[in-house]
Picture 1 (cartoon, rainbow over the protein chains, first blue to last red):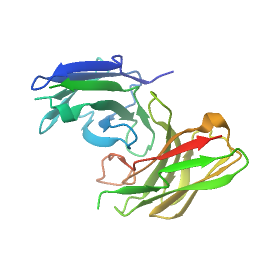
Picture 2 (picture 1 turned 60 degrees about the horizontal axis):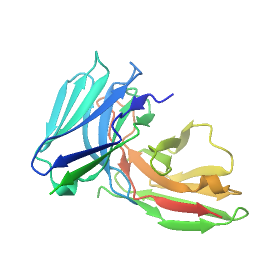
Picture 3 (picture 1 turned 180 degrees about the horizontal axis):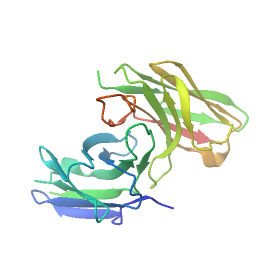
Length: 113
Length: 118
């Protein structure tokens, strides 16, 4: 049972436009969410996180939105750059005291120059 | 220093071999993790150490044996592996959880060790 899902395996976006990556979760106990970027043959790199007490967190070109009622989060990248081309994973955690981070299946983003 | 260092980067071993993967961090993190990732799949949690004690074992077969000699080091001992164990093994670290004033923190990953079992 996949508790964290990214239903779009791939996404192509023109350079300079907005990239929107989506993530859905099923476990209402999750209260901390993270986004990671991964290049081939490298470990995931942390991008941005959001706690369930917020509905938006922004860091430079990256913004994460959380809709708790829909159990949905999204990552917006504006403007998209060719260097953003990578696989993006969302991850969820069940709160303080738990070390279980569950990863989504990933979305491959391709930013076209 | 925000780095998690894993060695070796690549390892090829036979099913009767004994080998180890090593991980090191110097960020003062007291939680360390082993994840396994197969191609086109998300990272899957294997083990978590908190304050050098094993706190999570996700029903991993005993042919994988973790060890945390101190707060900076994490090893994964491998013995009698199967070809299906071939994967990218990722080490990660984070702040300890559940401390007053410490929100759940992000994982910092190493670059991984690519394991091939023949």
